[in-house]
Each structure stands twice: as structure tokens, then as C-alpha cells.
Length: 89
Length: 151
Image (cartoon, rainbow over the protein chains, first blue to last red):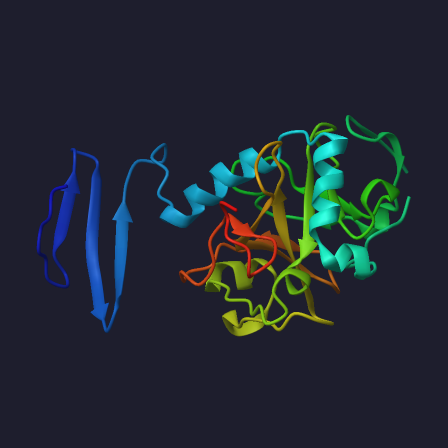
């Protein structure tokens, strides 16, 4: 991994089109600005993790696997938590 | 209305209970309208069926039923999407509901995404998948806090 030290107000370039500006360092937080072409997606690392996990979670679940979840959950065995505005078909 | 779904076939749903993600969910940016419901197939779970894609149905549980002490942490952007003034983080309860999406795979212990709860503003039905800006929870947490993910 390439490591570069920068001060507030300085920039880093990635290729010709992506510019990262170090706006502010305060305590343990860094505020960054990104200038990039529209087709370059700039997201937090956790959003990428979430996207990948959503893709896993969206896969069909077999009835057997679903029953196994029910058995693991004391809260499901004990009763039904109220649904946030959920309709019962 | 009757919703055509892959999992449940023709499913009668109460449209007034639908929730709307103005920006979709990460990986499913085009899926904005969902309807939450419980089903006899697994009482207690909340199914989140997409109204845009018949084959998309997430399994969720209220975060507080997984971690009774769970507290939300929203980015200012997510707070704004929910229409909360001043970028504040709301409390789970009458104002917002928070559910974790479950990942259930055969041969693996089920996990819950506590990094990115679905947060629904009860009054308006607006929803976001609020990716936390801290590292308190992961996206593959065991369902019970005492379990380890690889047990």
C-alpha cells in the first residue's frame, strides 16, 4: 500500500481524473473532499460491505434453513415481537 | 392489493403499510418500495418483500430483539433522508423502527447485519439502510450476543 503524508488543504491525485482534498483533521477524524468523474462511485468502505452482505442476504432461503433460524432464536420461541407497521397477510 | 412474489406466490398486502427507501438499498438502488409483514412460515421474523422485484425478499428482525441495548447512529445524510431535522439520531421506539437484515445460508449459522440497520420513520414510512459511521457492530453478527459467528 502506498502511504503519503499530507496536511490540511493539500490534495492527492489518483490517475488524471480523481482528486482527493484533505479538508480538515480534527482529533481522530479526517474530512475529505473528492472530485471525480460522475461514473466513478465514491462510497465509504462500510457501504461496500453492506452491498456485498445485501447480495448474500437476498438469496432464496430454503424452508429447512428458515426453520433452523426459528429454533436458534429464543425470542421467536418465546413469542412474536411486534412488527413495525407490518401487515399480516 | 395482491403482490406477485416468488417466495409466497400471490400475496395479499396492505399497501398503506409499505415503506419507501428514497435511494434504495446498497446493491438494490432501484428497489425503493417494500412491504413488511409477518408470515406463519416463521412467526416473529419480519419479511421485507420488494414491491418492485417479485424475487427480492429480505428476512429481518427488530435490532432490539437481537441486542436489547442497541442504539442507532446515523450519518447526517441518512438523518436528512428520513426527514429528521438538524441531522439528529432518533431513538428506536415510537419515532423510528430499526430492523437488521438476516443472512441465512444452509450449512452456516445465520447472521444479522447490525452495521447497517433498516431504519423506518414510523410516521411517514420513509426508510434508509443506515450504514453506521462507527465500528461498534459488524455486518455478520451472530444472532445471539454470546454466540460466535463461527460456532
